[in-house]
Picture 1 (spheres, rainbow, N blue to C red):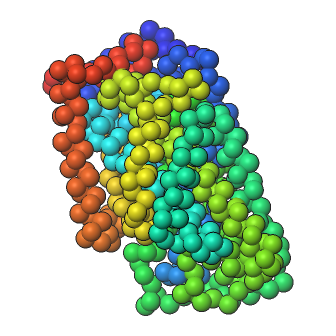
Picture 2: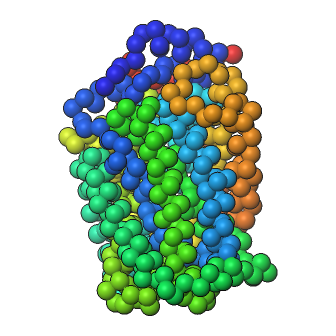
Picture 3: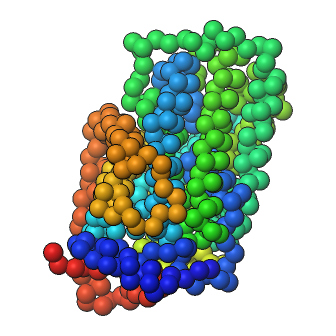
Length: 478
C-alpha cells in the first residue's frame, strides 16, 4: 500500500489551511498500515455495493401497492437518474479524492469542519443501523408464510437474535470473506428472477404495465419505497481504505453495481406485473414468492424464499461492514476514542461491529414501514451535508487532486445536485409526525454528543488516536 509523500501532505495542508476545520493530507490510498490484511478487489466490491444499495427486488413490492405498475416501473427508472446516478458519481469523485476509512465523514469534515463531520458520522451511522434492523424483519416476513410461528412472539424474537449473532460473526471474520460471500449470495438471489422471467414470457400482457390511477396513489409509501431501494451508494466510501487501488477500482465498481441494481429491480417488476393480473392490495413484502408459485410452482417459490433469506443476509453483512468501518475511520482520525480503531486478528473493527449489532437488536421492534421512513429521514440530513461539502470543495479548491472527476464542470456539478436535493425535501415533508419527532431528537443527540466527546478528549479519560500517517484535523482560528 502506498503511503502519502511529504510534498503531497504539505501541498494539501497549504491549500486547506484557511478552513476552520481543515482536512490535512490526501493520497493514493488509505495510509493506515494494513499490509497484512487482504484488500478488496473489484468483483467483491461490486457485490458489496450491490448489497449496500439493493440486494435484489425483495422489498420493492410496496411500490406497486402504493402506485400501480406504471408508476412503479417509471419510478425506479427516474429515481435512478435523478438520485442514484448523482450519488454514485459524487461517491466516485470524493471517495477517490479521500480514499480513507470513514468516507463521507472525512469529506464533510474537510469542507465544513470537525463538528459537522461528527454530525455526519452520527446521523449516517444511526441511519445505517436502523437500515440494518430492517433485514431480519424482512427476512422473517418472507419466511413466515412457510413458518407461521415466526410471525410474532417469542419465536420471532429468538429468530432475530440468532440471525443477528450469526451475521455479526461473519463480519468479525473479515471483509474479504464478506465480499466473496456477497458474490455467492448475489448470484443465487438473482437467478430465480431470471428463471421466473423466462417462464413468464408466454403470459406477458404489456397492457398491464400501463395501469395507473393517480387518484389512489399513496405518495408517502411510494416515495419512501423508491428512496430506500435506490440510496446508500455512498456507504462503500467508509471502507475505501480497505479497497485495492481505490482510485481506479471504486468508480468502476460503482458503475457496474448501478447497472446491476437497476436491472435487478426493473426485470422482476416487468415479470410480476406483466404476467399476473394486477391486484395492488396483495403487492406487499414477500409477494414475489407468491408470483413465483403461480408461474413455476412450489419449487420456484421455495427458491425465491431461499433467495430472499440469503439476500437479507448479504445486505446485513454489507451494511454492518460499512457502519463498523465508519466508526473505525472516525477513531483513526481522533473523532472517537481509540478503542473504536482496534482491529481483530482478522482486520475487522471489533468495537464498531459490536456497537452496530447492539443498535440493530434495539431497533428491530419497529415495523418495516417505520424502519424505512426513519432511516430515510436521517439519511436525508447526511446527504444534504454531503452535497454541500461536494459543492464547497469544487468551488473553493478546484485544483485539488481528484483521481476521478465528474466531467460536468463546477456549474454542471452544482446543477446535478439540485434534483436530488429537491427529492430530499419532499421525502422529509412526507414523513409522519412520529418519524419527524424521533429523527429530530436523534439529530439533537448528535449536537450534544460531539461536545461531550471533545470534553472527554480534553480530560483524557480515554485515549484518542493521532496517527501521523492518517489525515489530521486542525482547529485553526479564522
